[in-house]
Image (cartoon, rainbow, N blue to C red; front, side, top):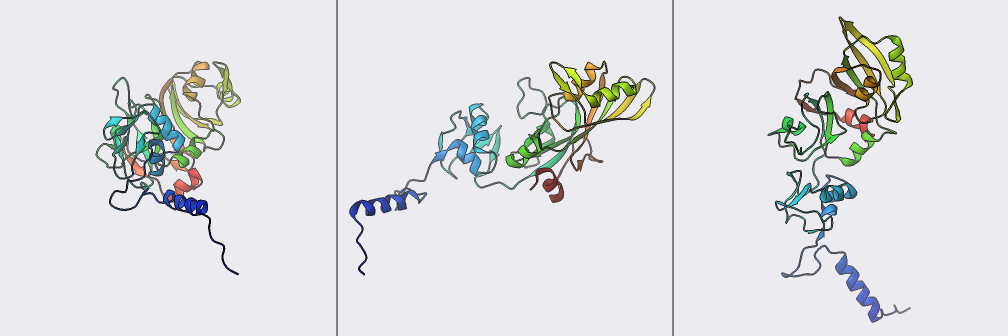
Length: 272
């Protein structure tokens, strides 16, 4: 049976379809490279989801060729423009995934930029050449200990998800020796600013004189949760050190030092 001829409109559609599938919209020496929106370009390079990248762009955190751009649809060309997030260059190709544990010193803020020009946690990575990495969760300025960083947004989202994220362990020095009634109150829940704050587990590590160290485990991550909960019970915090996140422990990592997570740790934390 003879094959039916394609009518002209079908041939035109096929030609259009062929051209649209080619990243070079035309052929020959005058071909123009394909342009994509800035948020999509960052997502393709593996540093953030498209929606997260768009939020960064609107917030003024992204530069193209040294200039701040606030339009997520700003046209870019792969390999042509230099993209930066928080002044950290983003490679033209999908970046190597990095998963890092830092022993955060007290006095540093967990942010890439600080309006008050205070030292940030990124000071600990000066000269390392790690490229763009972001904190996975936070520790406030006065707190110290285990803080994770990664350039894998999906992995980070699984860890910070309040419903499925891992437990976090803290050693907390307080200005008194809490009795069992106050320890029980922390486990059962303390009303504070219209919400109930509670710890999954609380125990007395050691006590001496007028001070004590508590071990506190949280299975949720409310802002300044431990400090607020203890303050509601009339207890002051002298030091707060995060010592574990899921199966990752601070161990003997020196203050201000960092190490890559092992493959086992990465998988255990993020389900990867």
